[in-house]
Image (cartoon, rainbow, N blue to C red):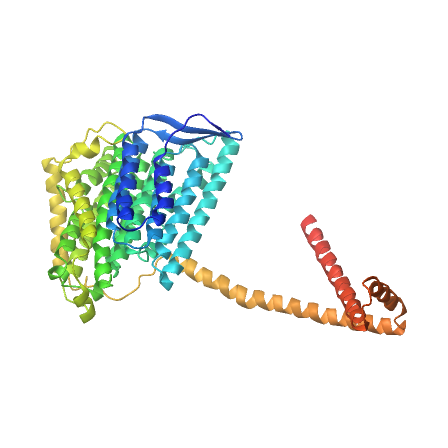
Length: 595
């Protein structure tokens, strides 16, 4: 192994911090929780463009640091969100939860700066195997089950991705991570795409997301909502820009996520479903592939990380303080949690693309790129999905938690109050950034990969957006009774693998176990028959041969008695039968495989 230069990767700072954090106590740990992510953020800010961290391993040149405008915009927002998430988790006493969150962010940064597929795969798997602990740390039976399903799905996706990487290496002789031939995709390209879109939660490979994110810890869900899907969007931008099938998949995601979010009763699961919808805009932007569309995908990923993190902070604070997250068990909390309401409202207006908020200056860029490329159907459907976003996240979430009918139990109402200062500070900072991005567009636009020639604050665009939002709000209050949350469960495609898992379990416990029991019984009966026949033969020969062998062996071990002689005889016979059975099985396997 040869290293061309020493280069400090931002992920290394977080990984070292994750190792040291459990060793710290009290104020030292609180300081480290903020200082380490800030150091990683500063390292990202001062990265020099180019290729760094090159390592010669066997016959491959591994690149740990490819720094350009595309990787920098994602590295910037990932480390910034790590700071905000760490501030939000200052009150958490469990250092292990915070340490695995940093490992998770480090995995995301490793993918973003990877210059080859092998390094990408290494950090891709680090993301999966660290993030699952943010689900398990909640320590509920449902969280354990959701975490296992989450891990199994991501391991499957990782195996498919690795298979695609190996086929790509065989076909091209290169592991370089860059734009693939999307016009004439081969098997390797399709497999790599499947590995990426699984992490992007593209239907029908999406059910792991709402299943797991709603079961994560309060602080864990803030990290989870920000990194996995947006890292996948980065990978798609890097390798699959202009692949037209992604336009269709993105539009389907945008509509699909909205429909299930409207039906959902659990506030955090609603937000998880809406991640699918919002990532759909980004995937569609990648499919369009133009400079404006890629800029829009990156800008929307940047804005989404902030406002979705803010929304999970707001609903997470409700869960933290009341122990409830379902609309049917909440209501009327504006008197008890006014700050949490205000910050969550900012997140809802941002995600709804309300003027002067972050979503307005990012989402519209993708829609405009669709119209420029004459993809009018896709662009109009994305606008329709935007109306659905305001319906459930901008209106449903704030209304049914903080207003509406008070469904709180006496215990819930008594416990309800605004969260600790650190949670309020994290929400305030995040809300401020959502407003800042919406008001001062150069802050975001200067970070994007290509020069931006887009002005969202035109009279036409503002009036069009306000009309859509106004009619959506009128519809919400006119049909507020049918929209009342009910304690139901919406079946999704995860039903298939849940039922499939039960089918496999039944097969293992019933038919397979029955066959195994039958074979074991057959082995036992045949073995006893063999022993009884051997005993009769031994008696017929008066036991001379066997007794002679056993006596000789007994003398060699200095005086073994008659009991030892009897046991040795039976052991020799059983071993003989076992050897015959093994030989027969091996012979059958050989004959079957050679046919």
